[in-house]
Length: 268
Image: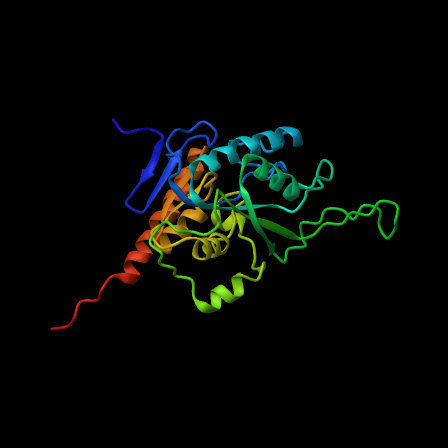
């Protein structure tokens, strides 16, 4: 009888239909790199996730799932966490700073913060006191990618094979990344992130053949980037609808990759 929690599994990718906090399907010290964007708690209409809990509850939830990630990482494992810089809905909160503090309390080492400039100012909903110093709102149209690690930053495990090019390395080690966000309508998920984000993290911070985990795999962007670049992809997703969405995207990416590398038959 198949395990109902393993939603999808191939040689290159696996999707676990389960809750990140309670799942027992990921072995401790087995993951090379985690790339994820957790729910932001800004009342996004996910299919089955409640995204409007109190900020205190959100921080408690973050501490729990990030602790699981710490357990799953290898000693030289890395953690790329895409989160808002701050939030203003329901009261101003320093989300990036608070989650960085929680990560350090768990035991993560801090390496750096990448600023992702989406170039999207349409999210602005209010200026506060218009043209007045009484109570203006300041909202930066950027997000953060916190770059953390478990116990040591220098990576010594894995194949030692890097596929990042010279130009990519030069551009991406500049900690301000500028590329557009992803279309909700195009992907079919209320908060997808573009494949470019995990693609950069995967090529910059992992070796070919490494295992990459996204504990909130959603539409599967991290999984697609991982299998496309020769990594083993593992996703955890609590919603069956999004598991199916990511399965289709991973299968399409795997097929495309196979077609690209398939040797052509010689003409006789």
